[in-house]
Image 1 (cartoon, rainbow, N blue to C red):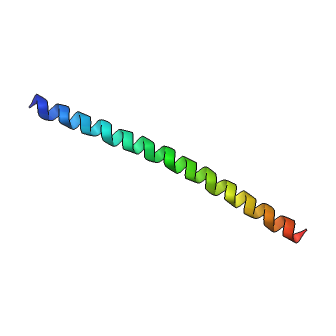
Image 2 (cartoon, one colour):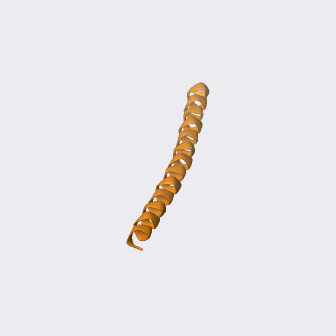
Length: 49
């Protein structure tokens, strides 16, 4: 039983690690997306001017 519990705990560690990695990954994507959007906005404004 103890072995099973340890393996579940290890699994949870792996899942939490994956989730925190995914969140960091999404954060980077959001940053890149926002920068691209700002750049696009800047292009449009420059074009209008």
